Length: 292
Image (cartoon, rainbow, N blue to C red; front, side, top):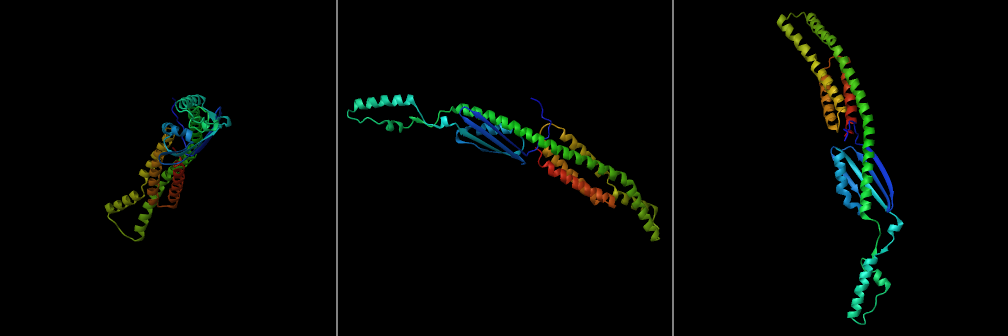
């Protein structure tokens, strides 16, 4: 069995229909985002026994999502018409002969009396095993279509997320390039204030003040972590199997670093970039909520 490398959305719809000798089967599958796998079934009474099997089939192929399964069965008119159980009717006639022989004078039943006996008339002639087998096969087909639809939607989501990750990387590179200039400007501003105040500081004290200013404006660690999280998000998008929860965690970590970056911002350029980062991350987070 090949490994599915595709990104899957949890939002999709599939409908399949099949005409059989006993009638027509139709299956609809709808799925939306959900933290866990939550299937619900609407099945006609003749197919109620299938629910455990269908539930297990979903569990094996889907990891997350609220999935609604509706199965309809339209019995052909020929199978809906009542049929006489001739074997049972023959046995019933023999039993009546014995009664009439043992109890003379017993009135003979009419044809209508016989038809009203339980088991003489059958409600339909469809083969229940054939109906169950056909429904199970059709469900597999519907599930295939649902998974393919989830994959097509997931491909679009992955493309949108990848585009935003690339913009995040560009914003991080912009801030990184600005930082030496920003830190030098802060150093110069401190020295200018001291000169204006005509205050002479001990060289060691002055150096300590300059180091403190540099530390407050240093965002190298946050930028490194942003780059690392972006790289990991790209890697997760290329991994097989469900990846929504991992991506959701990475979005939380990206947002944490963007907030720290914003709190350390000292100039308008880095503030603008921090705001842009938070907007991009929130957009990605909304998309990730729909990924399996």
